[in-house]
Image (cartoon, rainbow, N blue to C red; front, side, top):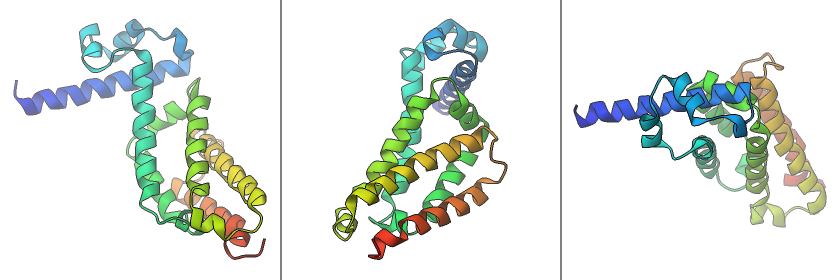
Length: 195
């Protein structure tokens, strides 16, 4: 077998394992998922699983880390302060990222135990909003700003979770536009010296 075919086979195996894992998370808590369950659902053998992962939590960690790394990369593309002044480009990047494997992410965000992952996402967004010392130095009421930032970070994550749960029936583009305008309006008084 050529190196290219082996590489393609490895990608396919990891995708099957991840998909089976996320589907099983819909059915039961992660602490009840066995490697046997994953290999049965993915139609692979245990050796294939162990060629890529050392355990159940390693699968979850890798999935979460890949998503978080992608989001951090998107955030880092923006100059400090620009994320809250005009979040639309960032939100559209997230939309394009999610659309690459929408059903997988829908399963992941609706899975039992996804609350921990959502909390991690909220923490990342909070950090990125409040880590700009230049913007923070211009804000008069920092406590009010931090409450606003926390509110928006929580709301952002909650909205996307509701969208994945099909509680919000609009396109990702429309959701991005609405969220962007809401964030810009909410932070406007802080950014332009009115508070």
